[in-house]
Length: 201
Image (cartoon, rainbow, N blue to C red):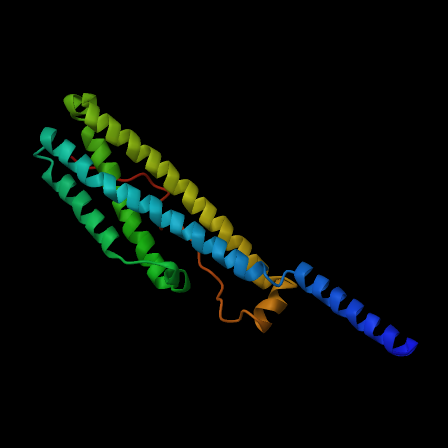
């Protein structure tokens, strides 16, 4: 091997090493990484909604014993829970803004029904003092906080993902390698949600 060939092979090796280094540092993996983070955050949102749905039957049964004639409110909670749990969602829901919106609306209706149930419970001092009710109410409040945090984390994950595919160099990698991954929708406030729920007795 002459000096020229030796120099050429070293130059090729150096070029390959430099290209490999550039490719690993240029963000080529950012898009799938951020997409998976958004899906994981969505999974956590679903997990917290499921936790809330699991608490509701016990809460309704506890209230029923004290406020049996509040049948309309109890029925509204049961129906809202049934509707919220009937909408089947998975990671593919993130690619379907309409299904995401339906899911969010069903969860919002359940939140409203639970708010009305909590207001009704204020009318029953014995119920308010019941240990089961207090424990369930505390768990439900904790779950609502977890839902809020999970939704915030999901919104941030979607923001990072969408920003990556809309800015350079992510936009380039998206168009070349990841064009099948769409821009993600996130939660939006339901129209009128800035007003407190109306409770009529």
